[in-house]
Length: 533
Image (cartoon, rainbow, N blue to C red):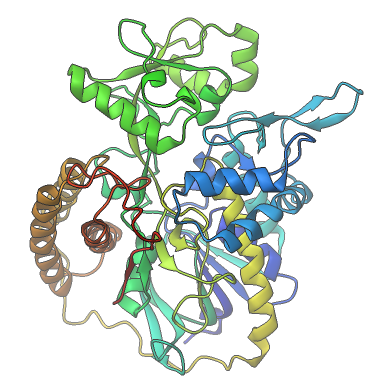
């Protein structure tokens, strides 16, 4: 094997979590590789609009941020993890500023430059640090630039991991990680890469649904990789639907930031009447699950295509200052948000569950870590509060770096592993099978396992997913892998995990709402759903 394919740390994913970890390790670990399935900017971090939650305001407090997070999580957050994460908010923002991220500032009453703070749903105070309405882009570009400058970090674009490679070890699953098989999509060749430590930072799985705010790469790859390798998966029934995705036939996957509602945007029906006050006293500032269900209810009840989000009562100068990206995007589709409301619908947005990890981001498999949206840390519980996601990426990148640097010198070099063998397969002449199965999967997940569920719908979905799994496994065994096939293979596993978790929860809680059990079961302490491989 070429020396260039052996690493100390192999990080799968180039978003906020993966690149933050690479930079935190780079000065102390010898060789680090970051793999990106597509371009380095293709992940969800780049598209995050809102910002990062952290306590900076004098009227705010760590305790208030903790309380808001626990409340949004509907009884399933791990209080210790919430406290750990929230207390590192300010230091995480300062670290990003050191990496060159320029956050939006304002002048305080005393004449000082201070961070401008937005307020979003579920937050009782202004605590969203942001760069206008394109925070993720600012964070992503800064971290990419720093990583490109560092000689200890190798960046690989268009590298899609096929499977994790494990070996026997003394761990819960009796396994340790030793490397990965990865498809170089440009050369159409599967490589073998080994490492002492592998970190999954692959993001979420919202593309399992027909409508999503996520980029095309959010196909649950890390969750499926970890499940096949033997890791436990937790709380996959809690898929968050962003309440306000732009509704327009040419506008795919563009969300309208929560900050629009935080700055006074009103949700209205086609006749201009508001409706959120009938669902929650907090109206537009209620947590996302409540707002998404309210919109879904109104759309289905009235037979309308969408509802509207109106910020036009604010001055044009205010809107252009706070929401320049949203304004430009909407103008492309003939919508001037300074003068008219924005048509919106809910769309799949965030995966609150994932690979079960501890407070140092360790999984069940020795030397395998998971950070960011791919992980189930206990922070989000049954519903993620707005802008806690990028904070989680930063905090758990830091936590993983601490544990990796403490232990990496004692981890032996991985053994030699077999090269990928595709001598018994051929190129596919039936690519239509992949696209057809992809479409079918996303349609029935939207129809049967979406914002509102029933036992009957879940049973139908599971029957469909089992048939698709069989078809996809047969296809995979006969043909050379492609990036589309790998994504489909992973998505069908993620779909099954979501359905199985949803079937186990006989109550409505947070993001999981079922007509068969419309109330939370408070007869006992709420428990996470954990699936064993």
